[in-house]
Image (cartoon, rainbow over all chains, first blue to last red; front, side, top):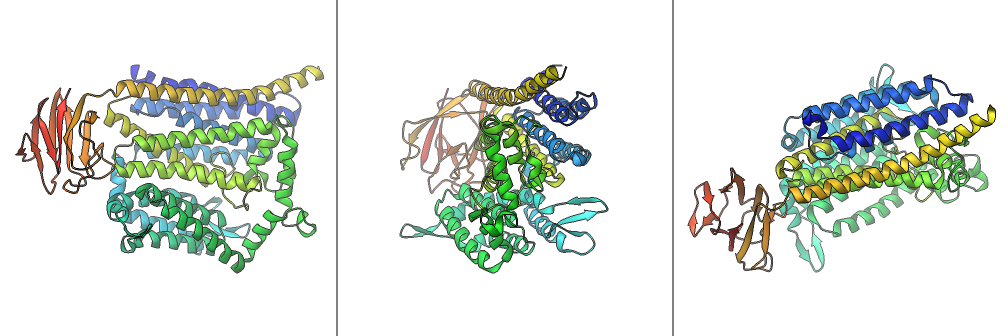
Length: 429
Length: 142
């Protein structure tokens, strides 16, 4: 019994998640049918009982450490389900089954491998797996092209975006590699104030990163390219403490952006719709989605139109690309702020776990994983708000899409295991 | 009837927004609590006082708090980082087992000394003993 009470704060937070899921579904469904109906309660009840089972599993397993990541991931997922019901209710059953798969993946991450540090021993297998996953959409038979981007693999009716999983694989590989060679990479000779990077030791990670970039550019996946560059630079910076690398990265981004802009038509379209979405030729063409998104944001005002009461269905493909705008329209600035604060707290928690982790590998792993969530949120919300060009990155946990949900829950599982190891090493709860 | 439904619907909408904020603050408070209890639980089991040190870090006289297991070495990832050239990246581990302190050398290049004697592999350390790693000397205290 004491074993089960050990994760008490987690359970108490889950009560609030249950309340959020329930009110969210009732608000959305009641607005559609103008009546309260018992079936509206079914989905949130199913979801919450699943999360409580996850909690019971963790408690029974005696997992120590963090107790807020599971409720926060569950809260974001619940908001995501509410928004799928609101924006594309025909896809709800689909998203719900992906949620169950994500929960299964989470449990698997908690159980396997037995020894988390063993992940570092197989770093070359991770590199290989990352490469295989990246190339898989280009293969015949399993590769699929959806909406002009060939970034999917499919088996029958089920499709999966492999690069979502590549993010995690890449972080594991970088963390393992940088732990081993950090010393030589950090001890750079200097040319005046400029460090001379020890190139031979950087070759494997540069190769891995370069390969990823070529593939995602080939697959026309702009968001993935930005994320890979970001993860690569952030981990290099965190491992070496050399701020010079971030400057190089910024330069690479500008130069690369310039080259890519002039070389690829689809990138030009993205940048043009970002700079002048309201111009004559854009307004009802390429810029339509972002313009409608901006109107939705403006329509939201301070407290929003009320969940279920806005007009977010006027944005094309709103359930996957523009969920943030839909949420901001219906809950207003107040709701958008709360959502961003949730991500902020999630990333803050992840970074705290990283700071306390006992080995460099675990530190880099936790920091890299938290950074994925941070950068991804920044890139997509920035794109939605027309702060930066729009890219096809998903809003973690919230946006419709199975691959993203599954990998994000695995990410939570990994963070919680690092936290568990830290608590055991320190002898705290 | 329709008005009551409308009022109910609006209260649900407002409740949703409020609940998200309540959850946010509860989560934050929970995190703060766990960090605070971590601090009290992880109170130092012992201290290493820096006796000799050729460089600025660690400073002579500095007191480093110990946990149950402490990795010592030149690498910044160690619990006790000793940026001395004569120390190995992962030099030694100092840990408490059954109220006794033990130090284990992790195959360092220049070895670990307890009270001036080079240790073989594992060695018991008592309070007041001096541990030398590279050119840095540390004394174990309560």
